[in-house]
Image 1 (cartoon, rainbow, N blue to C red):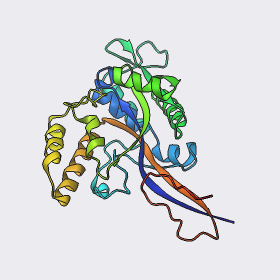
Image 2: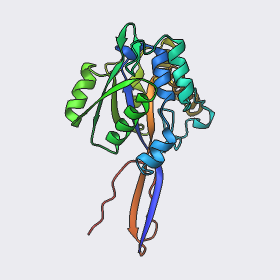
Image 3: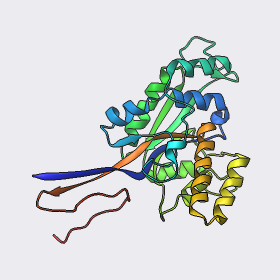
Amino acid sequence: NYNVSQTEGVRIGFSYMNEAGVLKNENLRKAVLMAIDDDTMCNTTVGGMYTPGFSVLPSSLDYNHDKLKDTTPFNIQEAKKILDDAGIVDSDNNGYRELDGKEVNLSYYTYDSRNLVDFTEAIASSLDKIGIKVTVNKTDADTEWNMLVAGEYDLLATNWMTVQDGDPYGYLENWYSKSNANYCAYKNDEYDKLYENLADEMDEEKRKEITQKLQQILIDDSAVLVHGYYNSNMCSNTSVTGADISIADYYWISTK
């Protein structure tokens, strides 16, 4: 009696990685990303509510997603090797690794919105398998935002609209080091320069190229833990025609 229209939307589920703390270590960030099976989490853990992805912009948007390269694909054994080679090892045999003589214990904040808690718990379980301890803190959206702004976290789960006004420029400010919106202490000079160029560039094709480069820099730096892209859907009675959901993140209102 019903039709269901579904598409990969423009909202992303991701976790900030705070580089002001222990995650300033690039090898640790790489290992974290490689220990996570995005396909299983998106298609099984959250029941297909997300489309798996590795970049900060969904593949549904026209920003050359097909030209991007995932430099940290799921590989548990490689994640362990990266940690071992970097000297991040379990020296006291308690099951968890140490960095600079201190046990790694990632403080992970999450709240109940669009399966974020499910992602967080799955990630904590995944990281436990490579000897990385995670303390999950379930809270509310306001408290989590305050922790984000204060920088008092290691990982923090959230979901964002990537093109609030039809362009990702404002969203990409999250990783621009000169911005007050850079809550994860990320800094890359090449990213900053390209982001500043994006502010003045009006040519559409050149903007796509710059945006592609910005995405790849974040991927190469293991700067963001991307969960996936939220799938928008709409159910309608079979008597209704033309009720096809678009990738835009908005709400339908009927007259009844």
